[in-house]
Length: 552
Image 1 (cartoon, rainbow, N blue to C red):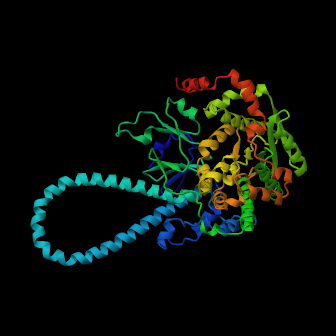
Image 2 (cartoon, helix red, strand yellow):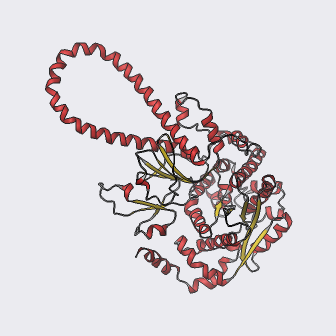
Image 3 (cartoon, rainbow, N blue to C red):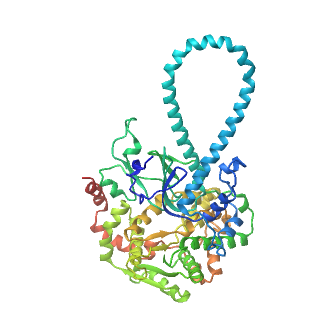
């Protein structure tokens, strides 16, 4: 068996690990590796408690005590021989296959025993008539054997593809991390990524696959940006949607639920329970993302979300001997620059700033449009803020040439805790729906924010990580009662539980109680876009010509 049929998968480093006939190539990190290792270590025999095992223990991410105790900073650096990342993932798939096959063998054995005992009497009565009938039917049976063999092969292929899809349905919702992988079991190729799409993946076909005779897998190509595929002459390029998989060249939506708004162990608790455990989850989420790094940055706007991340990171940096720096950009005299300098002085944050002017914004428009491929003025404004912040990181000598440039963001907090003004309208008119709106916002973050920001950061060789978008933290936050986030339909501050945490950890009230200001507005970029760039640049016309430049 060879892997030559995977040569066209350009998005990975083509380094495959193997275990029991399964091959895996993996990019990224799995943050709850200790939880999952604990599960594997406790399984001594795949035949025991088969129903719970095959579902990989549905409560694995839902028990707050297990999450906090297992991932706590006290034992995070312990010297256990844990499986990490790709090795862990390949063993989870291998475990699932064994458990499933073991279950099937047991069921087949039981049914076979029952069938044999029931048929023994009838066999003796029918033996004479069967001899005559069998002689006449032998020639017909011989003709049918080839057809049956072909059908069996097709059934076997279908069974194996169904099995790998079932395994994905069970395993992927349990993985908390930022990752992308390709798995090959000898017959099937499965490609997937994390539930929010933190690692980008695009795909397209070199041929028009209207004919069922064409091999989809041989004609599909993958890359981590659209332009690589356009340069191959592929005009129809699609992003792999988060929570979907590509199985043998076909994109499939998983039925599994990645987020839950009704976890029993989180219901009917005190305000103190929610606040203290949320504080611990934020701490753990940041710790897991900076684990193993010597240096890390924060994109800092001076709002409550990025200040919480920076303040907790400052504590972790002391505990784990990590260097950190915060980065703020804005136009001259912008609100973000002013407040960032004040906060940095008050909280002793190492701060680096960049003052953006009209010419810098005009020069950056084309790379932004090349990347986000949208003419929406708001998205362009946000994209410019990310672009200049990550450019500041990339050009700072704080990071060495060989250092991975990782920066944390406060992204996700507004979606989870009601930071946007539109939540007030939902609160007034459809209050019962607002919890589902929080969930919907998280599920759609890839299309709204993540793809844009990750793509732009990659232009500057920078990796974005968002601690508020941790799977454990999301599931906990979705179950926090609404009144701890938004107090009324006239609540202009919102996010109250986060603001209380901010003050608990030493952030001054002028920051903790600061209102929401989007990055493109607080930085002053939107004003320049509207007054000095929009009138001189036709965004729509530029985008029309963009794809053709690469295709022809």
